[in-house]
Image 1 (cartoon, rainbow, N blue to C red):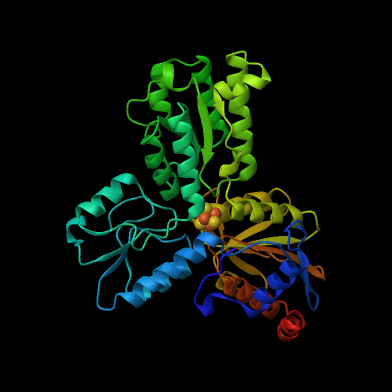
Image 2: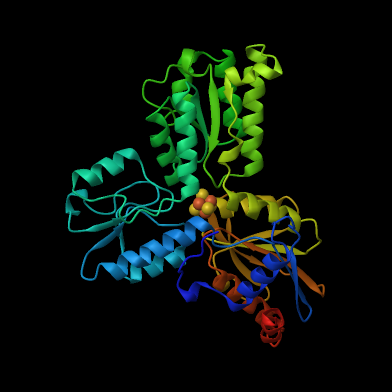
Length: 410
Ligand code: SF4
């Protein structure tokens, strides 16, 4: 896979050495067992895959290139380029400004953008409507476009299925930039509806089977269906695509479930389901798959707690947290500063959407076993800083240098 020119301060000598060694030993990427690190009486169980993905590195390279190539010009990002506060702060420090927040609310006046400005499209991509607005201003939206090719792959798949006459069901967070962009590109080809989870898919199924009155659909899916959506005819043939960072197992479960609903309702034999249900297994992103499978591999070991590192608004990171929470006490942290002391941790509770502090988060037993992974928008340098901080607060800070030297040794 292509490598990118990412600023060196996002890299970590230790994590790079670990990843390179694991990759050399497992070229076909079949081994999802974690890496075991020993820092004195602190035992770290590190997921096999974590951190920056192809799309994030591509976006960072293009954004820094845009700054280098346009001295003196105003440079804007449509919204956060990726969901990592540290990376976004770095870009702002270089003078890049955000036009919108993550929900699409304007942070500045649209009239103030001119064709002398540089506008970068974030890794999530953007809507056709936004592309048209930029073109109308004389700004080429493709010049510094960082849209991930794996997101574009979903758009292409939705377009192809749509052109074949299927309605697209997007499994995604309705307000997320990527889902809004995929919705826009999909509805240019066919009718489209967004489901956020299995519960909403079960409601959608009741409209497929006619168990719920059609008029109620427009309230249940308010803001989540394309203009002119006709429940009576637009749910007869469907295909499911996803926001690339959703829980892969949930997307698969939703696709399998809706397929079965269609097969049962229309009494199709197994070899005829394709008449009304388009198979779309290949819209899952490789990084989402790798990182989630690596967490499953990590969770086969035993540990006391898990730390998941990433931006609190990062969709892919939140799903890693969900997986870990099923097995052990899990703390979703932004960076090393969240490890306030050996007893106190600051972390994000996804269920209440609040950052909170928890006392006595570390069990007293030794050795202490901690699982660690990070989201696709989290720099490896941040993971190393968390390791260094953990070593410090557990009294093992003299072990990090020798650990790095061990892994860097050929
Ligand atoms: S998580 Fe996947 S789709 Fe999203 S930016 Fe990374 S590689 Fe692209």
